[in-house]
Image (cartoon, rainbow, N blue to C red; front, top):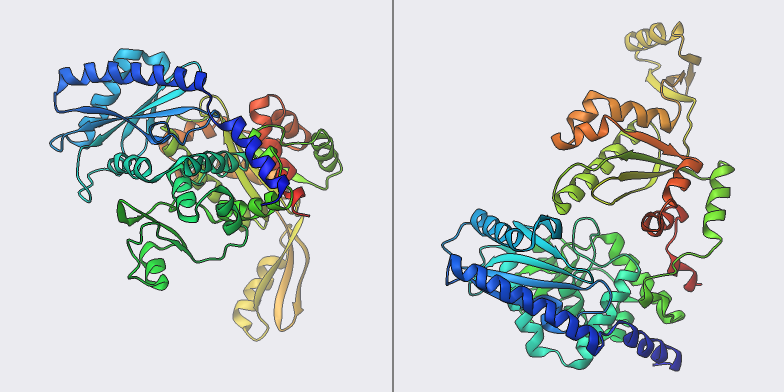
Length: 475
């Protein structure tokens, strides 16, 4: 390890590793919540247990974005609907609606907001492997796995990898992100032996990549595993060999991580661990100039987000993005990249970067020259049409015509499809009213919106700039 690399890693660990004061503060909050919940649930059913799980229980947490995971373990004779409702009602009745946020994974859970941290209260079943009744049942065993096998080096390596991935926006298995989960980070450092070992491995990674930390499926070949899991990035869950812990990771985030690893090894920097200062002061000016000159075509659809649990909402947002892209393609507009940003309460912005945002005319192919009957119909149709700009004419044994387009700009197309009944009918019912009061933002108006608050600026400026902050370190 080079001196520069070693120095950065040591400094980073001092920044992200919780100090004793923070540990004490978090511990007191978590102990209070667990004590409260044990008292509440014991009155409902003495068999219900409350345990601390996740990164705080494993001691792989960081001083950035502190979250605790408290699990409520129910006996098997409760239905999924019951464990969700009982958990939510119990927590809300204790801490009040203003401090609680309803979330959704396989079933509902609730987040309690404290001043300096969040506590997720998650229902699951008290079962033995492999008799899972819900997706969250494994978490208890994930905690036991890490606690029984991780030394201080692996714990610290997990912290470093989690913050590294956060800095490149590739951390989190939720649909909104499609990145690396906390447990996946822990399995990676366990498999490779540490943070830098993982970074070096991924800096030259190739697919398919099969990681089996405890050799649960060593008897199966790569081809069989790729076909079985339908993925070429597979990390076998040590407590459930039928589960791919890396299933949520998108191809984009996989390769983003790989290239960020290369950039970090070339030019080690604390920027990968501070989660701040991603953009140079010139970024906004450069983007504004590019948009003003017409060189950069960027558009947005602004609506109010509809009420839905975050994972449900973001799943719907991703599908709407694909639908708009599909409509754009049918109208001959090439969407180079699309994304979305939302505070999940007041504002939802769909973003699109275009190759070209104005198409005045389109060449339309007609029948073959020897297809006399259909060719005559084609000629008759287009010869006197007011939207015919040129032709009909023969080129390469086929009739052609150049037509004036009804929707000549991407802005026109967005306004049309978003207000069209056909498009609206494809949306989730709860989203329809939101789209009926849409607003199209383009050019400088979009940049002004994107930089109107610090919350928007981080995500939107990264999108508008067209490149991640760490790319400059590669060259």
